[in-house]
Structures are given as C-alpha cells and as structure tokens.
Amino acid sequence: MRLLLLLDFDGPLNPHRAVGVPPGYERHEIVEGARTWRVLLNPLHGVELNALADSFELVWASSWEHGANRLLGPLLGLPELPTILWPDRTPVRRGSWKSPYVADWVGDRPFAWVDDEVGETERTRFPGAHQLIHPADARVGLTAADFGTLRAWASGKSFAHKAFPGDS
Ligand SMILES: [Mg+2]
Image (cartoon, rainbow, N blue to C red; front, side):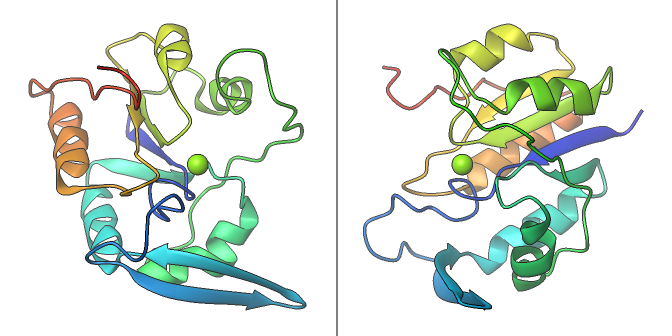
C-alpha cells in the first residue's frame, strides 16, 4: 500500500509565526474575490514534496481545504492533490480537531502527518510503526531535517521522532 503524506499548510509550508521573512522564503499575496491572504512560501518545499511523491501519495490536510489546490499548490508547483475536508472544527479538549477526520480518511493505510498542531495526543492515538506524527515549527516551516526524517521513515531506515515544540 502506498504511503500517505498528510500535509498541513499553515505552519509547515507557511511559517506564519516567523519573525520577518526567513531565508529561502518569499512573501505572496493571494487574492480571491474580496479576500486577501499573505503567506510565506519556500520554492524548495515544492521541489522536496514533488520528490517525495515517488514514495508517498501527497494529501492536503489543511484548513484551506479545496483552497489548497486552487490557491496554494500551484505556487509551489504541486499537482492537484486529494484533500481531507473538516465538517466540524470545534476545538477539542486535547489534541487536534483534525484527528477524527484523519483517522476516517486514512483507514488502515500507512501515513505520515505533518502539522504544526500535532502533539503527544496524536502520537498516542496513532502509535503504529506505519503512522508517523511529525510536528512542524510554525516559526521556521519545514526544514531539510524534516524532509530527511520523512524519507528515512518511508524507506524503513532508522530515524528519531522529532520533539514537539515546548518539549525539552
Ligand atoms: Mg497548521
């Protein structure tokens, strides 16, 4: 079964908590109708993600839902991707409100989930060797080390689980 790579956008690909514009990133203004969003994008992320598509089926797991394909993916050179939808985004007491939808969507397929709002709750909920919960730092976005971890996990090589922000 092909591995799934569930991709959050804000945080991993748009480091919205960065101070200024981090190296490698460019500011983009996205306009649709009367709405404008400002995001930071790193063109290398598109290159890395397209390379990962050899090992993974890429999936948007972003609150942008279909907007990720319409507005964001093309800016990174990504093809149209399957998209997880979130009928209810009410905050939950512990962990990510995305979790039940992720669980439904992936079924028994192996997956890596990259998101800046995953933590121990998700790692406990998805503890299998075929389930990788990988936190991103919304101040820096995905780094070469993050892509290295995803490649190592996909190829069955040893890797260290990334600590969650705030862990010492
Ligand atoms: Mg996020």
